[in-house]
Length: 306
Image (cartoon, rainbow, N blue to C red; front, side, top):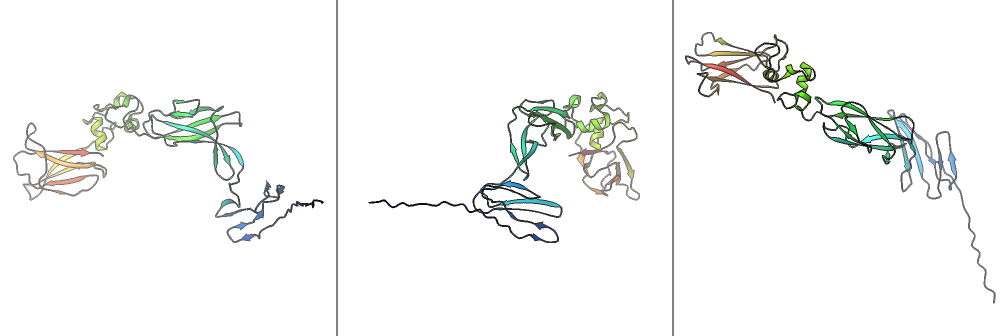
């Protein structure tokens, strides 16, 4: 008996299909097949290596100046690596903290692929960066205000240098250099006295106006200008002998002012006025004490800055 011979024929069908062009006044999209049985497909705008399987497509267009690229019909997204970049775990690190630099390969679809730091050399190029470890861990220094820093990275993988800008945040306002822990904000002392100036000490009065630096900071006046002073005077109220008008300046909306009184300068308690009228104006403010019938009465203004 002869055994029947079964012959299986294998064949490959290669086909292409092109979708219609779609356009409007804002955009134009041209869709083309990118499945070509494993063969290369090229045009004036792209080149690719296709794969045998369901037909997929790409579309690109622009609207309002924004260009988009989409891939469809694939289990995974298609992209091309086009360059190198440098990222960080924190672009706004607090002072006296750290931020890790992250080298990446950049893709044409706007995504990034993280790569090891092995072989990279990191450097502080500008700003309050005292050290960067060989693995790209950035240390930040103390600052008196939010301060820009620039770091760089080089590697045999590419020519030139990658650069990244960080902003070191002034999270501790009284910790900078010789101004640290003196009760005044470092930024305020730096503004009026520069860096490490002994005349910026809280209890000194460098402009000789009788008001020390601590008071002038609280009152909002200039500590090195003798004409910039906090003024307080008492005026009579015509026709009201039991009233006194208390006038003081300058005043600011971000500060709180409370007028207190006492019948002696050596004993007793300073208390807020029991009866008053306040015009609440700026920069000169008038508060009327409507119960000023005592033989002697002393006043003071307490200023609070948040």
